[in-house]
Amino acid sequence: MSSEALLSAARMLGLLAILVVVAQCWLLHYRRGRKMREVIGARMVSQREFLDENSESLLITGRLEKLLMKAGIRTTQSGLMLLALVLLVSSAVILALYGPMAALLSLLGWMLLGWVYWNLRYQRLRRAIFDNLPTIIDNVLRNMDAGRSLDQAMIDSLREAPEVFAPLAFRVRSAVEAGREYAGLFDGYARLYQVPPMVLVAVTLRTTSRFGSSVRPVLGQVSDSLRAQQEMRREFMASTAETRMTAGVFAAVPILLSLYMVLTNDTYRDVLLGTDSGKVMLMVAGALQTLGVIVILRMIQGVGRG
Image 1: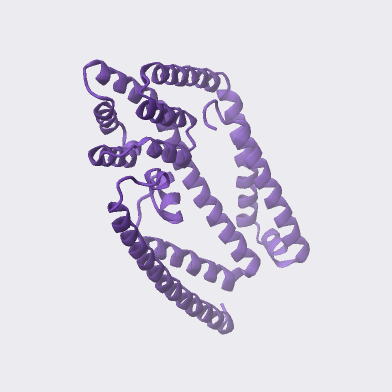
Image 2: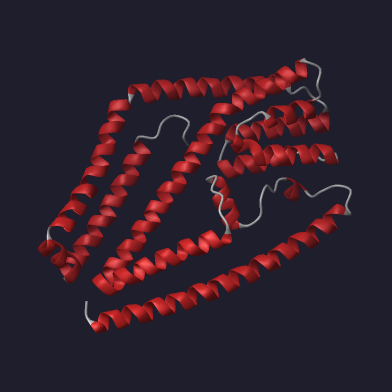
């Protein structure tokens, strides 16, 4: 590696370090301002007799916190900044060694891997919600049959639910202890994880609190429909297991073959990354492969995955 390349890499790393420090200072200032606004808003709300419905349905604040919560990812600001610094440093090294096209492809690759990781965790949490919601509803009905009130039955059922329901359980318990309506919390939870049956639960709770109707028939129907959907999904997944495996192989093999050819053939790599026609071919192939993977993933999604 020549001295000019080393100097260019050092300058790039210095610039990236400055950008990271500036971004961290801005993020710290933004979080402090938002925290102050939240404290002021909470003090103003505490003086009111009733909360606004939008405040009731608000599970979390902040886009980043919402994005991380949807996937069940728990991290800190320092962890995120360290991850961003690692990505920037790796991109700068690739830029100095192989050029801007390789650096851009590496960034796109890291972004794709991050999205796949986030989506897998998000879909697993959604699957857990769909699988456990009928049991929670049955526990609510069973507790009501035992003589408990609807509020207490809901609190007990959510407390015994898996960890994915922990934010909802905490806010429902707080709302019940404060004497507030908590149907909006189920609406917010349904929008967060895209769970339509939770909307039916929220509508049922809101109707019961306002008009005094019974929740048993509607909750029972929701539980039965979810169990029927789960049975359909199990049958569908069992009947299409070989097809999904074949589709997964078709999606992964071209990517693995291309990586093997690039890593083992220096001439092919130089032509692909060092010429204009090679870069165009690489971009077109990457776009087509990404489109094909997305189409295949959408095709093999099972019943109830949304």
